[in-house]
Length: 98
Image 1 (spheres, rainbow, N blue to C red):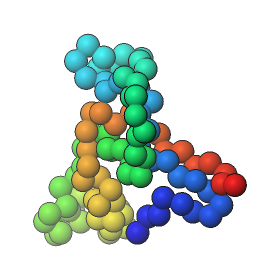
Image 2: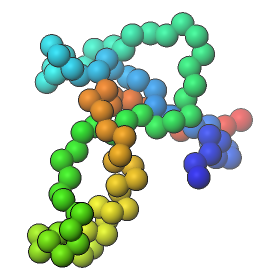
Image 3: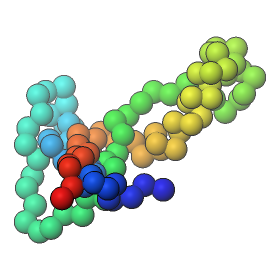
């Protein structure tokens, strides 16, 4: 489990650094995100940018197209790749604690 504090490091997750790259903003340089007026909870990683993943449902077929090590790596990554969105331009900050 991930903690929000790793002594002596403060962790702030999922801080938006740009507006979502959708509509007219797709394939353009990022622009500043909409600011917020209240305290923002920063304890959750932001979404992962969309990924095209190989089909690994069928173990035998998957191994015909990739080495076993790659298959196992993709399986381990699936937990992190489940939350995909085009609204993925966020930072995770790790700051020395006091």
